[in-house]
Image: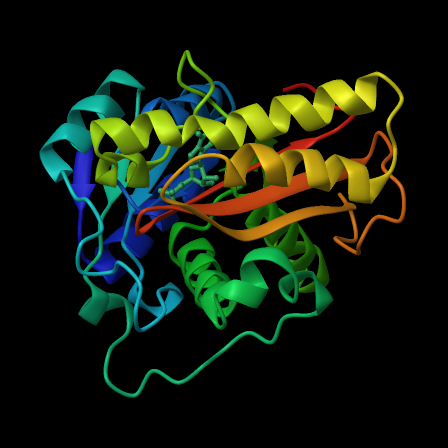
Length: 283
Ligand code: AMP
């Protein structure tokens, strides 16, 4: 496994491999890897010849009052996990390498970016779209894997890849959870022991909504009302959003159906956590 930090070196390395006919598989991350990332890497390993992992805490996708400076980092631990998952190349560029003086290009996105995280994190998905486009240009993957944990992000990347004819196959992967149901996230490391327990309310809300739906409840108000009660009963929580939307268009659901997405973002203390489920899909 090789660690590359220079943008041009990465691009040249992959270009050489592709000239030899190698199929390149790519997993972009912000590092501080956990088993959710590992599931993407293990699946990625089976899908091509060269497995590339990127680790880049992309400044342009963080808002001014967000956690860019405190975002957890552990390159040594990440290298160990990456090696165990069969990664061939780790690309860990610097912010200056990715955004040299004079950088000025943006990607204009459409309606998928408006609701949910797009509403509470203005500019976030533009930052994501630009960095993913750049990473695709540098790594030139045949295929890239993303987690359903960031459901809206995956939807936007699929749309952008299709609309801009980027020659990358996008693979979505299931959410990996802790044994008690908490969705794995690098940001879980911010939680105190008490908050870690409080954070389980997101999963409890997901289970409740899925159970009610499985038993025939389709009223959006009633489903969201039940979820809201579960979250608000827990101290230190504040709801950013709790929503039922069509899982393809991300437009509001009028009644719940199998293809309805239940998505939520909740702050536990100052840590913002997201989770989601498609009501008729697997948990
Ligand atoms: P991040 O490092 O948080 O930007 O995540 C990098 C990739 O890993 C994204 O495609 C995420 O959706 C995915 N990911 C993060 N957490 C999980 C999880 N718990 N299960 C599955 N995929 C995940």
